[in-house]
View 1 (cartoon, helix red, strand yellow):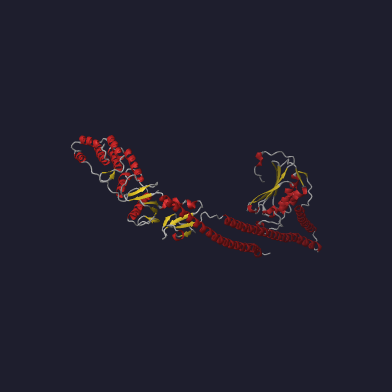
View 2: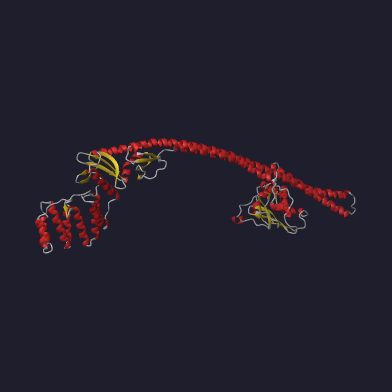
Length: 631
């Protein structure tokens, strides 16, 4: 098989695998799309039913509010103004009418004498402070507090203003509530005395009183006190919701005063941007209303959809948002459909998707599993096919290499025999030389055959090992027999004395050492030395061969011990070989319980070391477990 044909194999396997996977994924996507569309329709139908239930629940909640209004609980509309009977106060009144009370002429005379005779004025005001008229008492206390404050008599002024505060809504100083004027006077007293802490405490108290709507005041008075007293000195200011709610109540009160308010109803009020929902019921004595800002409305109605896990938003008929935000995929119900004063958008945040999610997960999981099995099967088949092709290619290369290796000695032998048989050689010395060459080629051919036969038996597990106690020095000393195969290059043998014995097959180990020597001779220059060494190393005996040849890259250190595999450097150099020598060495050494070590780099030569366990060896010293030194 050529190189181009080999490259086609992974492409064919990829196409054969990816086409059915693509078809399977396409079918799965189509199934998911159809299932998703069907589930979307079902969810829409369920959401429409749920939205209708939410609308019914909201209507039921508004009817319950109507019932409470019929019981008089809410904001009462009276001709004089507004009163709140629920927890949300009315901060200020539409147009509070001043309470006109005629004061005694004597009180006016005392006011004119304040500058000339303050002491007499104080005594007179103290008498009027016990009057049976609340208005007179309020005016006297207000004037008395002012005199004390002007004289820096803080404690007396504070007591007087506290007494004035008890009069509540009694009007003083041109129509302002006595309680509000008293708090103002007390705050100014502390301010003039430089008591910042009590000023802030008084501002906080005044702010809380304004937020509760304790006094009947108009919007201008409310804003004045809120800005000049409360906010300026660190007190709490009313929220925008309460102000909007009060303004909406005043707007609805004016409608009621004009007799334009229906007996009952629901609508949004609040000036140019109506956002406060008003629900009211009229009675014989007036009207009662409940007012909800968007935040209060959402808070009041949230229970109708929160238990279902839904998302609901309210809006005017023209689309302006009242409460809630954007709801994707919502069902929108108009006021005509629900009879509510606003439209609602209901989203399916709580619609369960467990069944659809489970079906989707099972389908995706099945497709992924099927694809994984197809890929795994295809990859396994590809690996088997490529392995078989690689093995076939290696065997083909092996047959070609063996043929070449056999052809070389056979050609030499045939040429020598032709020279000897031609009887044209009369020189006896030349004949003996030819006979010697013929014997060498014959021995070389025999070793090649024996190597292949031994490798075949060992690889098949049919070799019979003849293990005996053996001194590796005896094996190394036989390397002199290979000197004629390595040419004239120096052969340096270094054997340590008193080597421990190993349990080994003499012939097999000799063949392993011979293969290493032959490789060293083939892969190194003709004049470079070859070193052979044998030494003890801990509990093992080392036998190694070192050359100064072309070397082996680190990436091939493991592959060269596989059968029929030869290094790329050797192939490029055109050095002959069949690729079974090192594989045979590894199998022989492993059969003896040892291992083969290789140290080699490109251009620096190679060192192959056989590491064999010694007989009856002692436990090695840890210091002797350092890296193996090579000769």
